[in-house]
Length: 343
Image 1 (cartoon, helix red, strand yellow):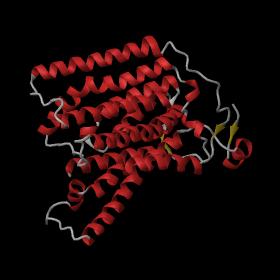
Image 2: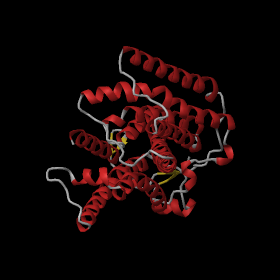
Image 3: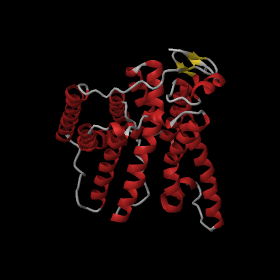
């Protein structure tokens, strides 16, 4: 494999590259943390100025951001969507600046296996149903006992119009934006640099950390592992996008049915609830194990190698096997997580 040691030579030979590396993974994760944080600060102070100009008053001693977020949709809706808008913008801008082709993200519509697609959609639903009791009931109650309460979304979900809104902005948008960043760029870059196993674990940890909430750490970590395993085997982001969408869609639908009184999942948390929740979680894990080892592993998802040139370019600063930007991003994510817990 030929090595092109500087960016100018690389551009002269192939103009663009069609893969991500460790440097990309570290930078993109750091940007995905910092940019939404900065934008949220700017938007918050802009919202505060608008509120003051409109004559809105704030109770002394209470957080004015919390007041705006909990009571005014003109503030809470764009504030909630800032991260996803940042992710999709970051993806395209980063690719453009760094001369990376969109084929690097590996969304392959022409090479979709129908049966694998159906299984991914079904498992997106099954994981929510099977893990709901364990994550929301058992761990949710445990966090409440520790004084770590989850932050409720102030955007209503009590009629069909708002349900459609949630499906679009909390199921479709995250499935696309988060998969492009975390499995498309970060996982692919990590896999190229440190191998599949460590890439699966680390990308899942980063996916959990980006949520910056201890209540939303366990489930994103589990799903991050599942998404990365599928991406590692199929090398096609379309499967994880569909899996992610149906996972979010099922969550939104269950919450909608609860809110309109169609179902009631407010069950007492006792030993029976805990045992049933554990059994359901084990069943879901077992089904995914069977799906992977007796179906997915036997299928051939290989394709013609596209990245014959190994781009080196400007070497990032490494600490061990990871770039310094990756450590900086993880440290910053932990700081945000602690701040959210304390606040």
